[in-house]
Image (cartoon, rainbow, N blue to C red):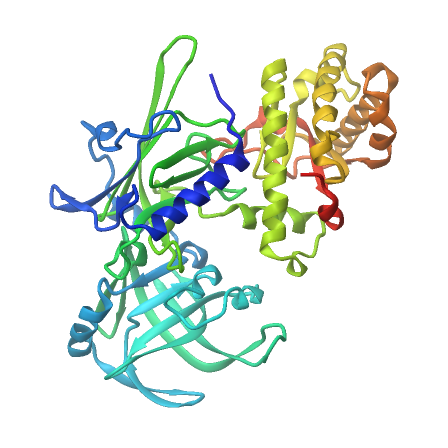
Length: 533
């Protein structure tokens, strides 16, 4: 039996507990140092649940054998620039810089502000706009986020007696990476602008677990994900929302494992009873998920092993924080999003200029929407309504086979009975006092599977969306009269044909799930300050 969490409450508690872990080294949590098992470094996270805070993760992996060769998976992976976001650095900067200066050659580089004699390999890299601002760099938060056409990075080099940093854009081609230095041309409060200086740094790179090795002219330097280095003594914290177009690990949409707080949540909002993770420095990431049926008492256990790319941050508070990309040799599972970035994309899709909004404003919208989905999912389950809430896309999907006969657009009798129950829950939640003014428009979207004629599917998808709208706004459906006029003015339809299929866990099109009618909210961004709390 699935359970639904109250997302906002969990986020607030998680943020509080993460803060405690970051500020108090004596707080519960996992040391970022790791421990040695069978000749390799190993880290365990999770294991506990909301009801059992004392459970340890190690016992869940007893008897679990290694089933993958990470190096083979890395070699089979076609890397892209966004895959290698994160902070990689020397394991112990103060100590290791002495060795680097002895063993790594130097070269003169003509920068725009003069010639500098620097190591031919970087001693730290900050990859991705979200990682450029940290306690380890001099750059302001968010300024590089306006660079949309390229991936951005900061490279750190050693001179004979100090270190220096320079911003770049970068490109990846197989195992080759090219950094191109940029120079900021804007000043003060102007929008960030830049130009290329003509200075380039080219290397080959190799990923192996938490390590990223750069090579040039037969000289190599192995850097380590910041969260696992001696440069921070914070407790280890892992979290990540899935990207909306990423395949999922057993419907896992997002998770957090930080100190005493640990949870893993499916895309529909229900959560696993247990979640534990084992990481080794050879590149294996083992996932343990389980759920106990409250009626039968039977426990379903899911264990999988993947290679991984660790996207470590180096922030002021969460210096041992990271998200993760999992690899199985054919697919990449991205758990690298956060709630603000996810909502920003959703708002962009509805035409909102998110660059004019603060991250706090976007986060507030995301959390309120999550609360709304939580309440709706809870009521759907209580009333036995089969509606799929997809928190990544914002869809509330209804199975087309319940609503229509094959290739028909008229709502069937069974479909009408279903819509009556659905709309009773839907309108009660949407028009509740808490969400007054939150939604400006409701889109009813028709979707088909990608078989048959695109044009015929387009006609069918639009006709089905129109039929659902017409019935839902009719007197026969029984929507509360207090809501009906408002619904009539804010509801629109669109047919997508087969443009937005649903994919299964293997990344293949799920034909049955793709045939659906979906309800989607358009958020009333301009009136957020007027929403009741």
